[in-house]
Length: 301
Image (cartoon, rainbow, N blue to C red; front, side, top):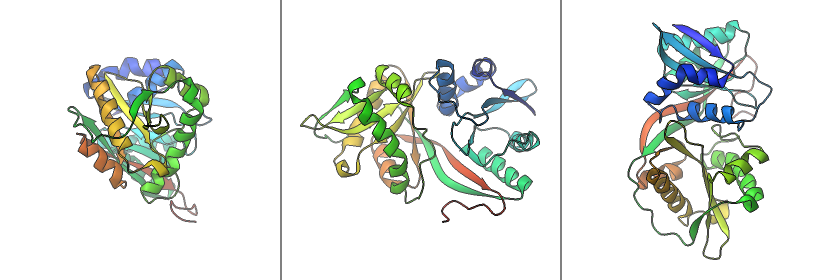
C-alpha cells in the first residue's frame, strides 16, 4: 500500500475524483468538504490539514482527510483495506502528528484508532456511533402547520444561533455530554454564503414565525447531504422536522440529485423520523477518541 498526502485539495481531487465518484453517497463528506475548500467555504484552523489517497498497484483504494479546524483535529476515514488503515496510523505516528480523534467508516476508523492507541500506549473509545442514510422515494410526512421557506440574509442571526445550538442539543437528545461531533459550526460569512446559495430553509408556523431549520451541504458528484436539522426545544413534537426534511428531500430529488443524511444511532427520535419518510441505511460510522495515559476519558469529570 502506498499512502500519498496532499496539501492541495485540487491535486487531491485530480487523483481521487474517480474513486469518489464510484460511490458518491459513501464519499459525501470527503467530497463536499473538499469542494468547500476549493470554494473558500471551509474554516481554516491551526491544526494539520491534508488529504490522503491510498494506492494499491496504481489504483486508488481508499481516501482520508484531516481538515477539522478545531481540536482534537480528527481525521476522517473512508473505507480502505485493513493494511492501509494500519499504515495510516503508523504514518501519522512517524510524522509526530498527534491523533486524538478519528471519524469515519467502519472498520477502517476502528483500525486506525486501535493502532494509534497501541502506538502511544493509550486507549480508544467511541464518542458517537453514526449511520449514513439515503432516500430515493420520499414518503410524505404528516401535515404540519405552516410552510417551508428559503432563508434569506435577514435570517442570518437566527440561523447562526440555531447552528450553534444544534451541537449541544443533539448530544443531549442522544443522552451524551459534550457536543455532536459531525458538524463544524460555520463562520458568519460562510453561513451567509450558504443562505445566499439557497442551501438553508426555515419552517414557518401558521403565524409566520420560524420554528425549524433544515440545511444542506453543497452538492458534490451529484449528491446533496442534508444537515443540520434543528428544532428548538419548545417547538418539538409538532412535525416540523419531518415535514421540512421530507419537502427538502423531494426538492433535491426533483433537481436530479441523490440525497443523504447522517443520524446519531443514540438518538431514536431522529432515526424514527427519517425512516418514516423513506430513508434507508447505507453504512455505519463512528467518531472515536484516543486518550493517552493519564488523560481524561470521554464522559469523565
